[in-house]
Length: 222
Image (cartoon, rainbow, N blue to C red; front, side):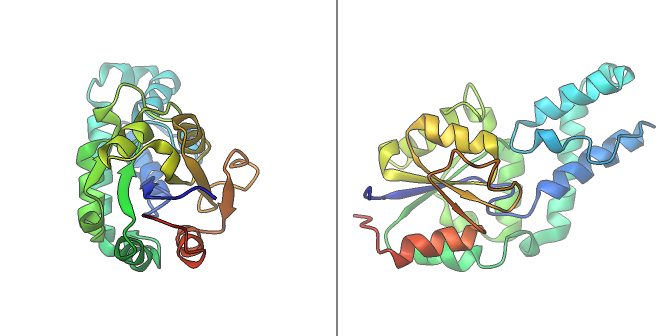
């Protein structure tokens, strides 16, 4: 067993139940322009950067290519939805397990394909911001997930080698990013099936279960 000194947490779908809010914000935006998106049209965008969904929308609805700030408008809608959900957005049990990990001396960071303004809004709305001295977002690196940049930067921000960090992830892209960065990766079944997260080192039913496993096994965090 590796000595684990840090935990690098994905945000959407891992710490907070927000994947449906990304879908809802996209649908609200498109419907506002008279577009009728097919049901769950952007499910294949889960875990990938927002600009991937924007490009997909442009391809599906060519008239929207004239809307240069489509991405920014979607993100504004998303932040409004996050504010309305507030603390309820965090998965049950996540806050208490983060507190236990912090008390055990584990260093904590967030690594997400979301942009900083959205990430800060979500962490503040849920009350989780206090656990994460390091937050790495899409707009702070050259490449988002599935590339390793975000998790490599998060480990570096904690002053740790990637090999002593566990990545918590709910998406295929995130699992690939964590593995390529050289981290141990724990997949959580909040969004995708176990088959989709087959590249992870371990798979858990949910995020608190993964955190509880680390605490129960008394992994040496020093």
